[in-house]
Amino acid sequence: HCFTCSVTNQVKVELPRYGLEFHLSSNGLLESINYSGYHLASCQSLKDTLLGFNQYLILKHSSDYGEETIIVMPKGIVTKGDGDVLFIQLENDTVGSQLEYCAFHVHQTFNDLRSKCIRDRLQLASIYAATSTLLPEPRDGMRGWDTTMRLLRGSHVDHPLNSKEFDQLNN
Image (cartoon, rainbow, N blue to C red; front, top):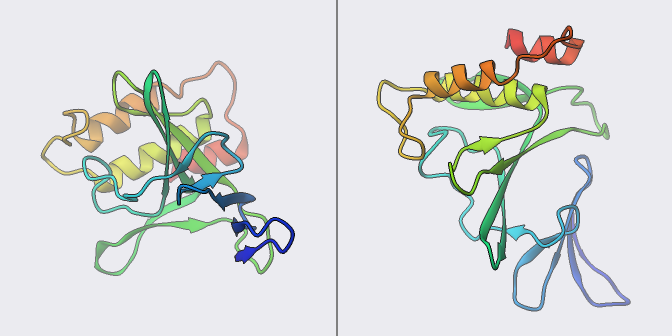
C-alpha cells in the first residue's frame, strides 16, 4: 500500500502482511520505520551472490563506520518453478494472513550474510544450495554448496530443533 498522510503530507509505503513500513524522506529515500536509520537501496539486486534469486529487499544504512546492509526476504520453503526459477513458497498464504520474513545482516569485514536465527540460516542454506554452480561466487569466493555447508555447521545446537526449524532443514 502507498498513501499520503493528510496531516503531515508524508508519503508512506506499507507491506501490511509482513508488518514492514517505509516513509519517503525529504531527500527522496524510502526510509524504513522497522529498521531505524535504514533505507531501501537504490539497487535492489545482489550481483555477487544468490545468483538467480531475487525475492528480497535490500536496506542500507550509512554511518561513520561504513555502510551497513540488511537483506529482508520472506520465510518459507525454497522451491524451483518452471524454467528453474527459484522462489520462496510462502507458509500460511491465505488472504489477510500475517507473513513472516527473515533479516540477514551483511558482515562488514567478511561480506557474508548472517542471522542469529537458526531457521533463517537454514533457509539461507537452502537458497545457496539451489543457486549453487561449479564456480565460486564473487562475494566470498566459495561455491554455493560450500556456503550451504558452512551455514549448516553454524546451525548446530545442543537441543532438538523445533518443528519449523526441522521443516526448514528438510527443505
